[in-house]
Structures are given as C-alpha cells and as structure tokens.
Image 1 (cartoon, rainbow, N blue to C red):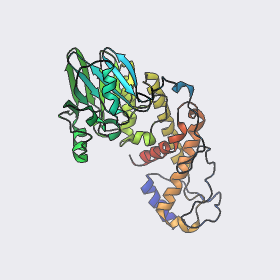
Image 2: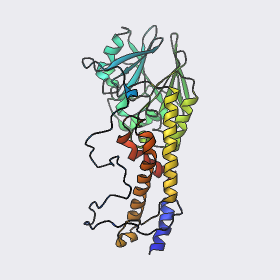
Image 3: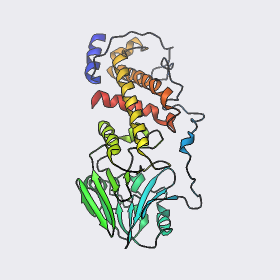
Image 4: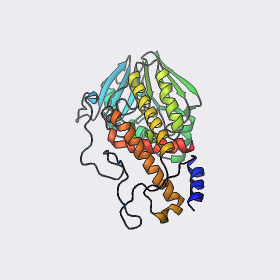
Length: 349
C-alpha cells in the first residue's frame, strides 16, 4: 500500500518524493484533533494560533499620522497629482483645468474623498479610473456622486457586470491593452500587463510627474498581503513585480499601506519573494512523506499530502525568518500563507 500511495503522491504533488519513515511519533490524539506540533516548529505563530502580541513595526514604517477628525492624509506627488490615504489604503486624484480625475475610491475613506479634493480645488470630478474590480479599492465609487466617466480594463468591466454591485458602477469606457487619457495639459497612461493579482488590474502611469500606481502588487516595507496578495497567478505576480522595477518612476503608489514606494522597495520585495521561492523549492525536494503519521493514515492520500505540505511550509518559514522578520513590517502576519501559496504554485503552475 505504501508504494501505491507514493505513486499517487508523485502524481498529485508533481514530484519524485524520497521515501521516509517516521523519525518521531506524535502522542495519541482523537481522530481529527490536533496532535503534537511538527518538528522544528517556528516560533512565528501559525495560522489558527492566536498571537498574544505581534512583532513590533520597524522604525522605517514611521509616516505622518492621519488626522482622526478627517480620516485621511493628503500628499502631493507632483504637478496637480495627489495621494489620499488612511495609512492602510491609498488612492490618487489629478487636477486639470476643467476638473478632477480620481483613481480608486476605497470605502474605508471614500466618504471623505470629496473633502480631500476640496482642500485643493473646487473643480468637479469628471473621470474615475478603476485600478481593478475589488470592492476594497473601488467600493466607495458611488460616494463620489455625479456622473463621471468611468474608465477600466475590459476584464474589470466583465467582473463588475457579474458582481452587479451598485456600489461599483459599471465602467463607461474600457480598453484591452493601453489607453491614454489626456485632460487639459495632464496625461495618464493606462496599461494592462495580464493577470497577476486578478484579471483587469492595471498600471496607471503619470509620465510628467513620474508617478506609477499599481495596486495590490508591491507593499513598500511591509509583508505582502496573504498569499502574495491573493494573487490568482503567482508566476504572473512575480513577473509584474519585476516589470514594475523597469518603469522609470520616482514614486510608486501601491494601494497599500502607509507610504509611497521606491525602486529599492520593489527590489526588496522581489528579493524576499525569491527567497521564499528558493526555500520552498528546497523544502519540496528534501521533505520525505509519512513522517509522524499514524500507520492507518498512510493509506489516505489526502492525509499524506496534507502532512507533507505542512512540513514543507514549516521548512520554508524556518529558512526565511532569520533574514526577513526584522526587515518587513508585519512579517509574522502572513509568512505562513506566503510559504503555503509558494509551494502550491511550484507544485502545480
């Protein structure tokens, strides 16, 4: 039976697994209940285990605070271009001679967006650009009022038509690959680089200001959101981070978290991602199946795969933690999900 299960696993996992026997035994526990922790379990609390206290944020994350009476912070990025943020989410707006172009409307502060714009100009909102379809970035679009021209990539329109959400009005102008918006003397270049985070997620480039907005891909100075920001295509996600670094921006608006980014931030994230990839590949190649399993469970291919994957992820977390836990803010929140997502991608993508 053990031989046939190994054959099944080699197919399911896409790997030639080394054979292994139990080098340690778990104490008896009722079926389905948690047993002893895996060997060499990292000190970073895994998913499902409450942390009494999270790792402190590095000093590099210190940024101007948000005025609680306003609920947002305004930052000028260049001629007529501004970022609005609550130090967790970020959006932009551009002022031109006849109006304002808004880029995203996160519901966490969308009720204050018109107030933020009003600090700069009394011109009307004429255009709204969606970075992508996710509600946490454009779910406050209806709060802007009026009837702006809404611009998005065609995949975003498809997803929004499926969602049928009145909080996210359907785009009125769509494009496939590239779109240039010229309003007065201001220019925004929109481009689609394929699926990574989700279909339709675009690059927004302000060439005169040398500002690039790409949402949910890079997280300057921070651990990326869970599972490489819930990337639908992890190889595509890796490619887009590298592609962002090739654009000659001076300021990156990433949609999260508390500050704008630089090329150094992009390269740091790519370095971290590659370290996770390398550690996971090594763990996949060196982790034997069955270790610590009850004999009866070795005939259950799903259980064998679960046991194997868990120990791969443990090795990954152990390998990258010494280098990165003090470099990335909130490292402990999502390192387990990054390693899990990476092994999944390496096995099946």
